[in-house]
Every structure is written in structure tokens, then in C-alpha cells.
Length: 389
Image (cartoon, rainbow, N blue to C red):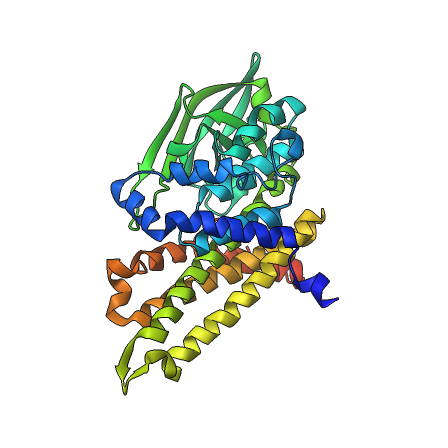
């Protein structure tokens, strides 16, 4: 019984080992170098796609691996643990690929999924708006029927990797439903569409993936750009948001593993008192042990969320995906802070590669959903408390 509940399948264990080997051949130094030069991680992305790792959760009949979100999360976690995380894995295969696989027509699946799976076609995801923030019901990006298609107008903000994307899956509402509860309509918009403009948002941490403001001014898309039903409601959106939270948790867990591994190695080697390594002292050892416990807790939540999602329990998956994302975000912040502190002044030296991670880890508390909104969700849906917002 223990083996069934707590041991991953042999195939996923082998997948983890293979990904860690490939990502480790690039390593943290590659990511840092690309970020400092203002360049992308295209080489690693294409290499991961060529080996089938980007598409492990997508349908086999369209070039994917036929696995589940648990497999894709394992890929991202191992890449991050090897120092080479790929943020767009959260977006292109996990959100966009999943939504298209579940709600797209056969023609849409055949058109977009093979490229998403092998890394030759990348799709960004646009939901956040300047005046909506965490309240997606305030989205005002609209789609109006126009002849043989639709015209989109609106703004989006903090959209990742638009400069690397061939298209963006844009969350909008139909023009005749600008108020009331959101019934999202999802459109695939090529990034070279007339009227589509992306502006870079300057950020205070270095990463190969950039953030963008998007402006959609009378952007025309054909009828077959609509994924799913324009009246399908929130379920087609949640098909992508639950994987987003699961993958966000995997990203943070992998980052925490990388930071913890670096800190433990340093604590074993660094000697300043009585010829004993600093890891001998409880002031160093206990914070590291605490991070290890938090790491295992977050991993269990993330694995349960993924298992529920892959079993088709979208409601149960939503609860645990939010919990996992919360726990992993806290973990990443704690782990990077402890790792820096373990290194002392060296923790902020470029040579050790931890300083920039302090800011990057903080993202896990904010995006793709803030920890406060997760606490609201758990209070309402897990504990049955009255809605507070």
C-alpha cells in the first residue's frame, strides 16, 4: 500500500533522471548568461522538445507523450532543480496545450498541439488586465462577431514570453457580456496580427523570459481562432488554470531544491570555527532541516493535486492545486533566504548564483495567483466560511 501511495511510477522516475541530466548539461550558468545578454533559452527549449519532454502530457495522436500533468510537472521540477527552469512550460504546454487538447476541435488540435509538444510552436497566455488584477470577473477585453470571425479589443498586463511566442491564447468576454459573471471566450491570436502590440515591462530581476503589456486594437481573428464554446463558461478556463497552479508549484519546488542543495553543500565544506564545517552548528543545520520538511510537504500537495487532475476530478484538483501553489511559493522564498544566509556574504556574490533567486522566488507568492486569493479560496471552499471579497 505504501508503494502505491507514495512511490512514483518507474516511468516517471526515469523521466526525472533523463530531464535532470539534460537540463543539468546546460545548468544555472547557462540561464544566467542568457539573461545577462538579454537572450532566450531557445536552445534548451528546443532540446527539451526534441526529446519529447515538453509534450509529455499532451495526446499521443498529436505528437505528445500521452501522460498526465503529473509527468509535465516532474519535467519542470527537475529542470528547475538542475538550475535551468523554463517558465514557459507553465504557459505553452500546460495551459494552452491542455485547453486546446480538452476543448479544441480536431482541426485545432492537429494544427497547434504537435508544435507545442515538440517546442517548435510556442503559445503565451493572456488573462491579467491592468484594471482587473486578481478579479478576472472585471476583464473588459472583448470579442465582437465580425463577418467570418471576431474583432478583439482590450489590454493585458504581465504576460510572459510574448517575444518568444508564435501566438497568444487570449481570455476575453463577448462584447454583449461586458458586465456580470465572466463567461470567458478564448482566442488564439498570432503575435504578428495587425493591431496586436507588445511592450516590455522593465523588471528588477534578471530572467530570460520577459514580461509584457499587450494592446489589442481591432485585432481580427478567424472563426476557428475561438477555442471551445463562447458560452462554455469557466470550466474551459479552469482546464488551464489548475495545471497552471500545479506547474507553478513544481517551478517553485524545483527552485527550492536547487537552493537547498547549494546551501547544504556549502554548509558541509565551509569551515571557520575549530576546523569543523558550519553545518555542524544548529544555527545553520536547523533552518536547512526546516526547509527540507517544508519541501516534502509542498511536494506531497503538488503530487496530490496532479493526481486528482489526471483522474478527472477538476473540483478536487482545484482545491489542492491552490494549496500546493501556496505551499511551494512559501517554500521557495524560505529556501532561497536560508541558502543565502548559509553562504553569508557569499550568498549575494554572483559566483554563487543565489542573489537573483531571492527576487525570482518571491514571484511564487504573487503569480499566477496571490497567496491572499488562495487563502480566500481555501477559507470559502475548504472551510465553508462566508465569502470575504
